[in-house]
Length: 396
Image 1: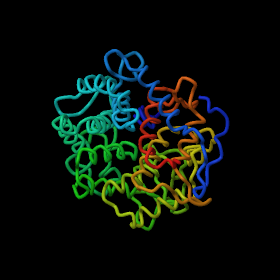
Image 2: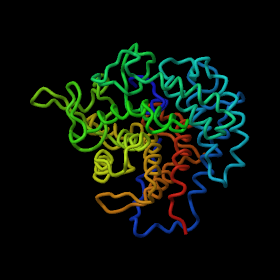
Image 3: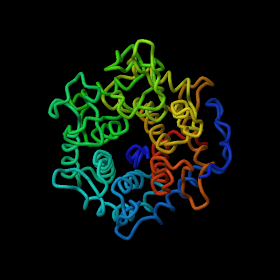
């Protein structure tokens, strides 16, 4: 791992055989007994059993029980559970909130032992607090959102608009090391939106500059520095090229291009909508064209190509599922256009989960990059993904 991320803790097992064939949108699969409840209840039960006595979830090796980012992700999932599961989830949420709030600092951020993750942790804490009770935790949410706004790379940190990192968010605060990336940025944008920041706020206008530079579309992205968009409509991790080493394409004119991949593309689509970009905008259409051409839930598509290793396509699989569900729920349609026709995306996601769930209800990834062998983190991704997908799962 380049640095541990909450996607990374977040971008950051055995897959039990090949996933079942995906259903065509025109004819939803007849599941008989709806499996969504079985999958959800198993995952929820596992998470409830994994809560520590101090209320936290997850753990950094060698540190006391409980990890702020993972705890926030679990809280967000439990607090947003479908009504059938809310009573079961509520006691764990109340206990976990106490653990989370103990880690808010005087400046509004949420931090813990391991450095470099304050953007992730603060963003996820905002998501969690808003999901539990926006009014009750209004003061804590505002302080965290104000800190997160100040975490953006812009003129206040001496980062000019012609800098590839301008408008983005990264691991290091205060402009000491401008090194923005799509994963930190999409988490920050979602948190600020949850906190009530309006699309016309300058923080989102600056973020849109960064997002556009991450998109492989020369129509809307002229490139910055040595970067030349590959023109497939998808998104890359980092227009500054500082950590974007894999999948590098050296062009004849001395510029560099990079392969798009799924988790960043769905995250980029979601983030652009959050920043106020119209669904009729060329950037949204380009992202949807990439999705249409590369739709699959068998892998985090593009990572295998970037790393020239098919196994790499399983890296960050559950992080991908999370942004996949969130992005498509944001679009608000039960179906998505693919090269094989319209698909019920939420049903496809449920099929992927049903095939991969462990006997104890948890989920894990055999590829351990980005903490995805941690069953608490990965199962929290699944719960949150199902929450977004729940209204869009075809039912009788």
